[in-house]
Each structure stands twice: as C-alpha cells, then as structure tokens.
Amino acid sequence: MIRHLGPQDLAIFRAIRLEALRREPAAFASSAEDWELLPDDEWMRRLITNYVFVSFEDQMPVGIMGLMRQSASKMAHRATLIMVYVREEQRGRGHAKALLDALVRHARSVGIAQLELAASAENPAAIRFYRREGFAEVGRIPAGIRHEGREIDEILMARRIDGEPESG
Image 1: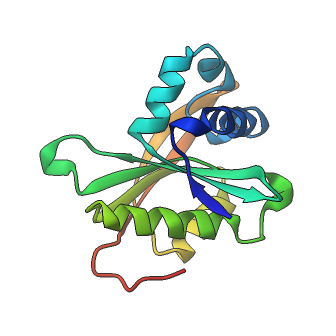
Image 2: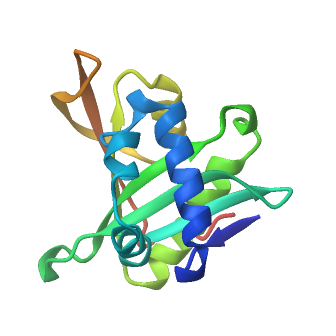
C-alpha cells in the first residue's frame, strides 16, 4: 500500500527517513546526523513542503520517495525525486515502482511536467531502475558527493511526464 503522508504522519516520516539514512549512508547527500539534529518544526516543514509517499507492508513503512517541486515560477513545471529508499529485504517486490507510479500521478495532478533526480554513480541498480522507468541521463556531476573520504559522481537523470499515457 502506498500513502501520501500528511502532517499527522510525522512519526512515520521520521522513522523511515532515519532508517534510510542509517542503512544506506552512501546513497544520500544528507547524513543521519544531519537529520537527527533537526527540530520537530523542521521535520514538519520538510514533510509538508515536499510531496512524501511511503510504501507499507503489513502496516510497516518499508519505502519512501519524495518530490521537491521547483519554486521559481519559470521552473514550477519541474520537480526532483528525493529521499528514495526501499528496505533491502523488500527490494524486487514492486515497492519502488509503486511509489514512483503514485508520485507520477500526483505530480501530473499538480501540473508538474518533468521529473529529475541525481543518482550515485556507484548505485547501478538504481540507475537501471530509473532507465526502465523512462528516465534518461542528462549529465554528471563529478565528485558530487563526498562519503567517508571518497568522492562519488552523481548521475543526473530526467523524465518528461506530460503527454505520457497513464500507468500503474
């Protein structure tokens, strides 16, 4: 089951976001420590200013995917996928696709025409998933992330969603 989180879901958001950052630290630009220090009002701001979807299995959150819309009026047709994570033991079971499908439906409903993301060059499974889902590589940021003394390139990808047939 996929659910679009609201203000009443702050505890769910905090739990799955911190789990993601702790279990997959190399996959994110933020660290668990960055988020653990946030006051509750900042957690709430991040939940309600972005579109945050969570996948549940037996009523437990097992995946998260967010969408951060560009705020400038000339860029409001664009949004960035953020916080993408599925618990390792749940991967390959359709959670990421279901999250992305729900996110795409919602994005279209609010007038977003293009989705963008940055994926770690050291995460080929994620890059394959995004390619299967219609994203194309549009660039690369050399040494986009530093993790444990290593510099990791970020692969920039984009997908137009206006004019596409509905899926999922």
